[in-house]
Length: 431
Image 1 (cartoon, rainbow, N blue to C red):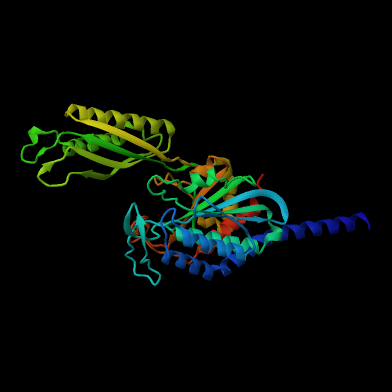
Image 2 (cartoon, rainbow, N blue to C red):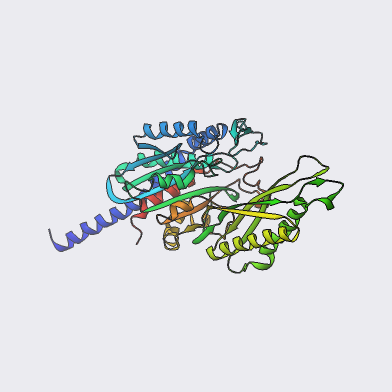
């Protein structure tokens, strides 16, 4: 064989390998789109059968049955969670893909063929249950990715962990749950995960599109309780008591001054919301005690600590000035969802290859919180937003998450499957 013949054959082999690489994305795209009917069926089944945090028993079995049929190794973790492990036919890293499973105590108002009429128990009370945040779609997309990747097992470079996580919305009462418990139970070990990817479907982003943000993306979520103790009196004689209701109004107003006048919002946003107040039993009795509860959202640790300090000073100071006492309790619930800046930048070409340049967009801070953050504390991680708003709709009129009218389109869930699968195949080649 002469030199020119050798070069010709070598060039042909290289071209063949390059075409094969290009064909991989085409095969993923074709197979993902072919799964769309199943994706909708899975999502609608889960939507019609929602379960609350740490109570996702039927959902767990639904997922386990699916993964076992695909020949994927399975394990139950964190009470109702599921981990599937698929070892590819080629050497490579361990990549984790995550979806959350739980629903919310919300009564659905949408008139859909698959509308939820389910009931559940939350903190000792019977409540309606609805997938009012899109976790049903997350499960369906990851089930689809598992099916597609199982069919391409021989070509997978490395190992894939499919993490189906319960209790993202928060475990009830004093129970443990969610991503923190999954991590505690070893979900990122044995084998050790090199990177974790997750997605959240959004009612205000057009279906098929994906949004990303390097660095701090979603806020830290702290929960607080302020208990005010005054002195009970007849409602007609307020001067004979110390009114915790009137004091709470002063405290609430002053707390908003932290956001509007004290926090340096050029660094990062701060949100402080009082969402619940409990006091009194009768309209003509000034109660002795009042309890208010709410949430704090921050993106910067120093700002977070400063807000905590100011809240304590404001509540105790105002209460004391009025002859009452105040006790402030703050629980660090969820840390900042911090996307690895380096990894985020590196996967942008993968996202564009998966769904098209025009469908990939950088976004801004999000004051919602996500316990996906706990995975990012242990391994490089990127969390993405994926569109579920029907094309042509107005984002400003999209029904918000966690509401009875929340609704998403499931017509393009296949794009989410494409994203997951392309990340698995292309991560190993990231320089």
